[in-house]
Image (cartoon, rainbow, N blue to C red):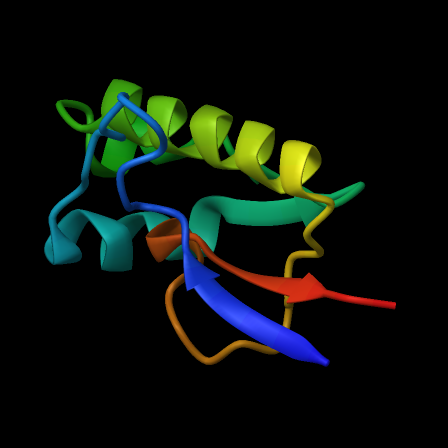
Length: 91
């Protein structure tokens, strides 16, 4: 059984920073997944210099959510990676 959740929602009392859809689309080619964690490439700074730090925060917080929930990043999910959608696999 699998369920899909969007990680850019409110987690507890903390609200995760958000990126504009435009920034997400620009950053998507620079996001990879390694060891079930999102990684933002350094070259992304050239594409969205102002939102780069926000993107790093979103990715860091999402990686914590992935790890704490036992989720698995679905590499085949047809949405932008920086939108940070996860697939929670229940074995």
